[in-house]
Image (cartoon, rainbow, N blue to C red):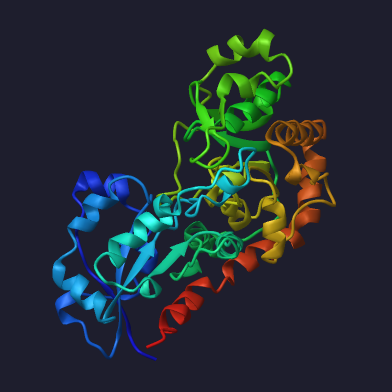
Length: 405
């Protein structure tokens, strides 16, 4: 098998790195990195672009690629590798086809086309481009676009950065019986989202905050896109929150009590921080996922994987079908213990349903919760081991090696 090389480059300024960087370089550190001037036809050489978003700043970044690299790409000696695995994007605007106006997107302007043209305009074959993305919805999207007559020639590979990042913590933390002090954790101190305000409000309204580890940032008025960016379908935070019981009467009081702090930290997932102290302290983990609104599909992040890594039962306040996706990947969920039909409910119904699960759990004695956890340990161990044994990294190497000359 030929050696796989990643071409070293430092195209970004510090500011651009913050805006553009995909934050995933560390999981590729075991690849061999070389200067493009040292490439050999005997090896497979990939020019890796760790891009967080296909929209902002990419044009400026692409202009910095040396001409010699494009010449080597034209000959197939170097191949573009687009690494976009810390965010999930609708690269084809496929959801724009499914709207009441029968609106057809301009394919030349969808994110996929805008990225690919940086290479094809320099005579780099589209089929030489490899694109890493975090979830597998691209398979259905590409099939859909091909049925519409569009040719998608780039090679796509699924690689879940957050899963890979949680493996060391899964290996480090053994699942044993516990004595919980709290019933649940619902930590929403990161980026504000309507569904995060919704779940925290429901827990607050039910008087459950003190029974769990809860955090939430200051209330802000958001304007979230519910369909493709090509269609104007938006929901404000006020409109969203008006769906919840007593919001008109209690909403201002709730807002005045924000922020709710847990341990004075925001997101810790960019760091190698052991969060076992959270999972040893509380029984149920509520993963308020990124819950992307501007594309179809499912996006699972560290917010869910950490529960599996640390051996915690969980509910997912996120994209419809998230539990189905996990089960398809070999994980077990908790339908034997509570009703998981929320997985296919709309956002408001889902939040109300999960809130009722938490409310029922909080009505139990902590001694019974400890016993319930002990009963769940075989499921939790199965999930943790499934995470640890995931072979995506080896499969990625195999896929990158499978190049047609």
